[in-house]
Length: 245
Image (cartoon, rainbow, N blue to C red; front, top):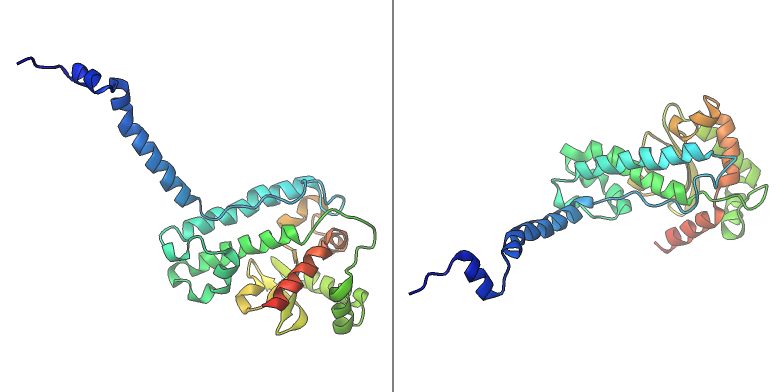
């Protein structure tokens, strides 16, 4: 009986030695790709405009660093925090921060800081947009509610700016819908109003990295300029969605 070599056996089966050798590697590569896809988790959303679109209120370099580095750091650290907690992976970020008190204590602080940072910044990019005209102000239902709640838009603007400038240290100032009513508040670090059951309609980041390259320590100048970058259409949409809830 003739004994066939391994090469002859391969040829008789119509399979090349190269293919056989590569098969385990291809299988491993496919598995690695699946594993990598699972590891991706939360991602930094693309800006809905160019880095320089908010100038002169916010300069392009600040936007680039803020979005590509600071926001990315929050996302990377959030993914690390939930890496061993499958039940908290892939959850919409708004739902995750709403449930912060149910997150395991071992990762709660990391999720609060980095999940809050991801949620806040994701909203922040959308709450701003290229300036269409000078004297940027809301219209429609939001304008009416602001007038009813605060007396007039300029009074609201003054109160909101005072909260933003007066926020000690790092944090945010917000216009939120709380139990059906508009309210101005601030949050420390990367805490998010969603954590308190409130719906953020408008927010400004007053961490120094949001303005220091252009304004140095002059936070008030940054806040004053920022009003021209507010996307009131987005605020109106957030109000409609919050009302539906």
